[in-house]
Image (cartoon, rainbow, N blue to C red):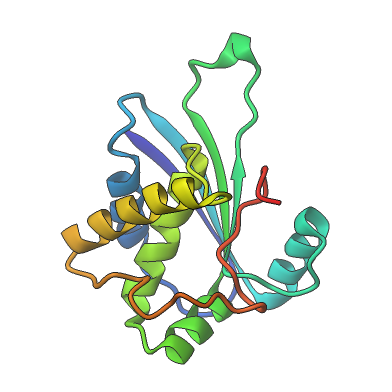
Length: 166
């Protein structure tokens, strides 16, 4: 079971809680234990501030992943961590890349959830594994391959994680 805390800290339009739940549950279905996570939707100011604080990058990015750091004696608790998503960046990226907005949202939420599960894209082998899983999950939703035309990552809005990504 997924316990999802959706925090909306922006006036911008965003997908429904049902959409977020669907995307998270799909990404987390390989996990047999209960899961607890937060998704915080932010404006560019908060997104920039968080990216600056945690990654020392002075711009808002699309998604930041904050995996829970749980001490060994508490490993059986369901807390996975938090995702922070900048709504304006998601909308701008979808428009610039010619992607359907809902498909881009689904991709970023799934991508962030996979980071919370420990997936990463630091080296090529890990990136290939993670991207293949993302493609499979998005195809199940009827969405196209998000990497088909996107071999170039922009400096203003890369998909990122905050732990061990640099």
